Image (cartoon, rainbow, N blue to C red; front, side, top):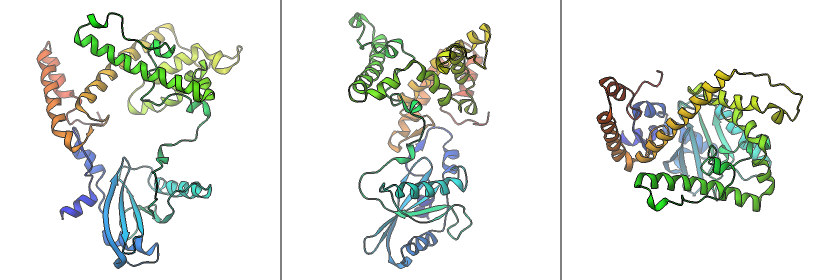
Length: 350
C-alpha cells in the first residue's frame, strides 16, 4: 500500500505551512495496470512486455512515470495534478504544442496516446510519450511575445529600483566599508552583489548582443513592460503595483505613445499619486523583508522546502516568531503575530 501511496502522492519535498492542502492538491489516484496497458498498447505491446514502472519526477503541475519495456524501449507517462488548470485544455494544448513543434523539425518527444479528461479506464488525464534522449528542453517556460516584452535581464540578474543599477554605474563597496558594523557590512555586501550581477549582465549583453542591449536601455521599454508583467497582480491581492505602473506610464505617455499630441486615457490626482507611490515603497520593503526571511529558512515562495531542510526550516520559523513576540510592544501586537505568522498554517481564502 505504501508503494501505491507514493505513486499517487507528492514525495519530492515538504511545505513548512499548509502542507496538508498542498499535498491534497497533488494527490492523484489512478489505475496503474490500466495505465501500463494503455502505454504498452500505444506501441503495439502488451502489459506483460513491461519490465519496470517507476515515478520519474514531480514538477509544479505534473507527475511523470517511466515505463520500460523488456527490449529496452522507454516511455514516459505524464499525469497532471488536480490543481492543474484549465481542465481538458491543459492536456490538449500540450499535445497540440508538442505536435506543432515536432513538425517544425525540433526533436521533441512524440505523443503516443493521451486523454484530456478523466473519463477513461485509467481514471485520470494522462499523456503517454516517447522518452527523449539528450539534454532536456524546458520548453514550457518559453513564451512567444513581442520583442520589447522579452527585452531585459533574467529575474535573478536584474536590480531595477536601484538608482546605481538603473544608471549602469560600475558597482563598488562603500569607501568606509571597513568602518561599518556587521549588519551594515552585510547590507553593503548584498547591495554590491545585486548591483554586480545587474551591471555585468548588461556589460556582457552590450558586448555580445547589442540589439538586446539597445532594447533593454530604451527609455520606453520598461514603462511598457511593467503594466504587462503586473497585469495579473490584482488577482493575487496586490492592487498597488499595477496602479503604480499605470501612474508612471501616464506621466510619460507621450514617450510611450511616441506621439507628443497623444493624451493618456488615464488620469490621477496628486493625492492619488502620492498615496499609491507611498504604498508601493512600503510594500516593496515588506516584500524584501519576506524574501530575506524565506532565504533564511531556505523555502520557496509557497513554503516548499527539501526533505533535508524541513526540520531546520520549521525550527528557524519558530525561533523567528519567538523573537518577534519578544520584541512586540503590546499584547495586541503579540496576538497579531501569532495569528498572522506567515510560516504557520493559515486560511488562504482570508
